[in-house]
Image (cartoon, rainbow, N blue to C red; front, side, top):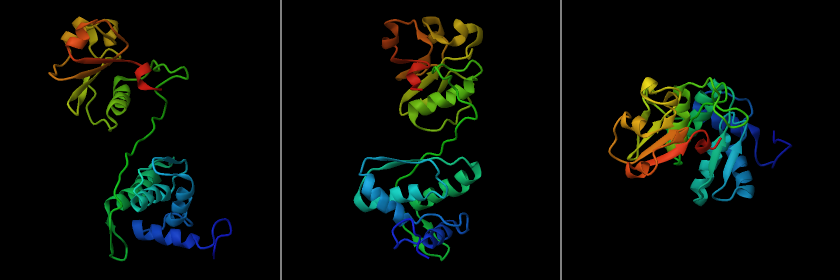
Length: 237
């Protein structure tokens, strides 16, 4: 039956069949048809927009954004939020991945890739920062390392978080001085960048980004190729 709450040419059943063909299973009874969301995007989200769906569910919005971009060459981006971790991983993310990279549907037909992509992120059970924007005193080095790496590189952190050198990304090294990572070799528990602290850091010959509570190296920092970023203020919380 045509739904009574939106344009009659769109039928809720079509969204369910569409999802079945992509994921080979019935997950939601009445997901919205992708074509419907594409029409909404066409009305209110011109190229370059950021589309937010706070109740991502089956991932129709992400699918529709990629399809609309393919159709008109737009460069829209999207943020999808899904609180159910299992649905987020196995339905929302999996659907967007398949339509972006191409897939074979339940009927054996090869569906061409729409292109584009996404990053899958999980929220921490507890915020790392207080309401005033300061780092919570019980935050571990490994937790802040993940946040710093993502803020600096836009990618997920896969390191061991057992060194102030978090890794090298696109030719620059990313360091974090926090929570005593240098133990007794530093002042202030390893949170302040000084000449002696810098001298015991893992060596990298190229440009360096160093996150710390303060910088006391003066002009030497520029000579060493250091870009200093003060925590927590440089983390844009």
